[in-house]
Structure formats: structure tokens, C-alpha cells
Image: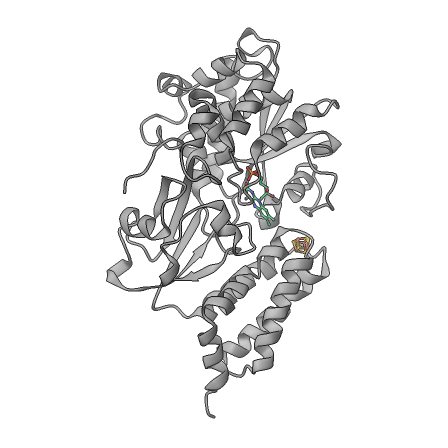
Length: 419
Ligand SMILES: Cc1cc2nc3c(=O)[nH]c(=O)nc-3n(C[C@H](O)[C@H](O)[C@H](O)COP(=O)(O)O)c2cc1C
Ligand code: SF4
């Protein structure tokens, strides 16, 4: 299987800092095309493409665009979520570092279509290179009148600035991100109102992922109808995959939706280190489900991933080979979320410590059947009652492994270590 290079077509071909290079390789031709279209027509093209957000939840992008376009309160904001704090995800960083102008062009088209005049790219603080690159590119685009006032002579003003986080994972959540931009501690807000009604500085705001914006120029180029032909009926276009773990060739790969997880691992990742067997694969990052080897023929598709009751379609595939202990992985996962919890709501603030207590019992082989029940019901309560996606999705690894690796849990109950 070969990659399908749409978002990544300019990777390693251009100097990412050079706007001349970007323009030479067809950059900004789609902004020019969009500026000749009516604003509503652009949103209709995005609707026809059925582009779904690439940040994880897969929310249809045209609904956000339409929501923002309808708002009368000015100014309106476009935010690019480049926080990418999820372990196992690094595809947004690749876009920012290798084709930064594609993100700015996509944001500019969305701004034009929705009537927004202000843009913010919120970049994870650890992405020092990406922050420098984006700041530089914004300056270059402004010099060429591709950002700023009267862009390309049209009655359209749009300026962009970079803000960075300070290493908190929850700041990738849209309202925590908004609070962080406003200079407050990164904590979520109760919804509704949604950001398109009341976002940053209480102004109408659209927040989308880096890869989502990078798709917009391509949709304008080929039309929504043609875009929809790529992938599967529910998941159109391509997906950038962050492939990591025990594979021979980890990296960022672009594939059409609908290919199998196995083909990505075996053909693009060139199989498992030293020919070992795969034990399990975690999808979407630490907040995603862990599935066994026999499920690897599952296709990459939003609908399939929704079966795990989690919003994990960001495109991370973490491969774990037979040497690794399931309970070690679960402990590491929950420790991460315990550390990153903002503490605002009880299920998440208290739940992770309780999950860890029970997992420790499985590690020490002192767990009882009741502990297994408690682990499962606690994970479900957290999933259902936590305030934001962190606490809702952090127990996914536990819920999925109890489903697919139940024998390993039972084994630890049935065969305690004799003292
Ligand atoms: C704890 C948490 C962390 C998140 N981190 C990110 C992130 O780093 N990048 C991102 O695009 N979306 C992240 N999201 C999802 C965002 O809240 C939001 O849904 C997304 O930016 C919308 O973009 P999209 O419609 O293009 O997917 C996170 C959600 C949660 C709950
Ligand atoms: S789920 Fe966790 S991170 Fe989200 S608001 Fe509650 S305590 Fe904070």
C-alpha cells in the first residue's frame, strides 16, 4: 500500500519557511479561488465534502462554519488547535513544521467564509520549532498581503497570532484552551453555550484542529463532491496517522480513510521490531481503546472507532509487542491522566486514584472478582459523568481491555502468587 499524499504532498519538497516555495507548489491558489466564490458557496463545498474534524471527535466542520457565519457579534475568531498533548500523536507537529502555510491558508479561507477577522494558533509550548516557524510564516504572509487588511485587494481583513500553552494536556480541550488564551487556568466550561456562540473573550469562535484547516484548500481546489469520493461514506478524505511503538518504521503517514490498521503497521511501518508478535494496539493515543492483534483488520473510519464509545479518531496507532505487560500499560496510562486532571469535577479528580489502587492489586495479584467489577463500574461512571473529554475518555483503555483481554484480568484473580 502506498500513501495518498494530499496534506503531506509538499512535505520535504519545499523549504517550509519560504512563502515563495509554497506559492511555487500551488500554495495560495485556492485562497485566490475562494475569494472569487461567495462565502456561503465555500461553506456548501465543505458541507459537500463532509469534512469531519481531525482533532479526535470527528465533528462535521461545515456545521461549525455555518454556526460562526450566522453570528452577528464582532469580532469573530478562528482558533487553530495545535496543542497536541495526547501521547502518541505527532502529526500536527509534522504539518506545522513541514507545510505551515497550508494551515494559514486554510484558516484564512475559513475566516473569509465565516466573516472572522482574528485568528489564533494555539501551539503546545514544547513545540519550540513549530512556534518559531509559525510566527515567521505569519510575518511572511502579512508582508505579501496574504494576511492583514484588504487581503489581495478584497474587502477582507484577517490577522493571525500565535499563543502557546504551558504543557497542560487538558488545554487541548476547546474551552480549557479558550480559558488559557484568556490568561486563566486551563479548565473547561459547561456547554452550551458552544464556542461559536460564546468563545474566546466571549466572542463567536470556531476551534478546529491543524489537520482540519490543512484540508480546506484542497476541498476548494477539487470541490466537495470530489473530496467525498475519497475514503469511506462516513469518513471522507485522507487521515494522517501518527504510527509509533514497536514498529520498524514509526512516523507520520497519510492514508485514505478505509484502509486497515494492519496494512498501516505492516506495509508503511514495515512490521514489528525484530519480527516479534503484536500483543495489542492503542488507537488515538492514551485516551483511546486498546485492541488485540486479531482486530487489526478493522478499517480506519470514524464510525468504527465510535464503537468504542470514545472520541479517539485523531489518528494515533501505538503498537505494543508481546514483551509488554497489559497492567504496566494501564498503570502508566492512568498515572498520566491523574497527573493531567484539572481537578474541577469529582469523578475525574478522585476516580484516577481509585483506578490506580485497583490496578495495583492486579499487578500484585491480590485482586478479587469484586475488584474487577469495581474497576469496570468505576471506569464507566467516570466515562459517563466526568465534565470534559479528559475524564470521559481516560478510562477507555480500561474498559476496552476488560472487554478484549478479560482472561488476563481473570488470570490474576484465579492464580494469586502464593506467599
Ligand atoms: C482533554 C482533551 C484534549 C484535547 N486535545 C486536543 C488537541 O491537542 N488537539 C485538537 O485538535 N483537539 C483536541 N481536543 C479536542 C478539542 O476539544 C476539539 O474538539 C477540537 O480541537 C476540534 O477540532 P476538530 O473539529 O477539527 O476536530 C481535546 C479534547 C480533550 C477533551
Ligand atoms: S474531567 Fe478532569 S480534566 Fe475535565 S473538568 Fe473534570 S477534572 Fe477537569
